[in-house]
Structure formats: C-alpha cells, structure tokens
Amino acid sequence: MNVTTPQQQAAYLSGLWHRLSAQHIALGCSCSMSGISVTLEDFERDIADYLWAESERLGQTEVVAFLLAPGPIASQDKAVRGILDRLQSAQVSEAVAQWLLPRMTKTIESYAELHGPAPDAILRGGSGAWRKAYRD
Image (tube, rainbow, N blue to C red; front, side, top):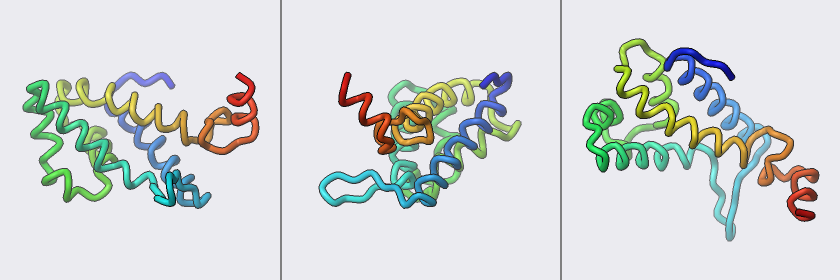
C-alpha cells in the first residue's frame, strides 16, 4: 500500500489490526500451545509494553509520554488500537509517529503474515500453506 502521511500509515495499520481481530473472533481461531488459548487481544498489551520498554531504553522521552498518556500500559484496554487511533490524529508529533510507525508496521504485518488472511499464512491452517511448508 502506498501511503504518504503518518496518519495514512496509522489508518492502514489500524484497518489491518481490526481485520485480523475480526477474523480471529469470527472464525473462532485461537493459537494454542499445550491447551492454552491465545487471542489477538492478548497481544495488545504485550506489543504496547514492548514499545514502551524500547522507547525508554533508547531515551525516547516524547514517545514514552505519548504511550503513557492514557495511563499505565497494564491498564490500557486494547492498547494497540488506542495507539493507532491516537497516531491517526493530527495532534501527534512527527517525531513520535516516525519512531512508532516503523516498529508497529513490522510487528502488525509480521503477525498478519503468520495469522492473517493471506493464502500462504502457515499458521492459518490452509492446506496449501502446510503442504508447501512440508515439502520445502
């Protein structure tokens, strides 16, 4: 997708994240290991917590303040959606958007490749994906 502004990139990521979430809910999909069921929402705080820790580690104080503006990460419901919604507003600084968007793009697109609607998404369970992976 060709996007020209940080707000457009945030809108693209927000749409992708919402589609992935709806797919997991609608299809009853859960990624599980040893009987533990994990949904997309379970990853939201983990992703936000990673972004917060990384911004603190790298001294990105403006990013830290942006991430914690709604409150502690642990208390933020749907943290990734909230971050993306706020990134779509014109009130976010260019520095914050430029730091967060590449990291969020990599994370969300990686998740989509593994779990998303793409026909070759291995963990989607498509027979074509499993057959291809098995033969390679």
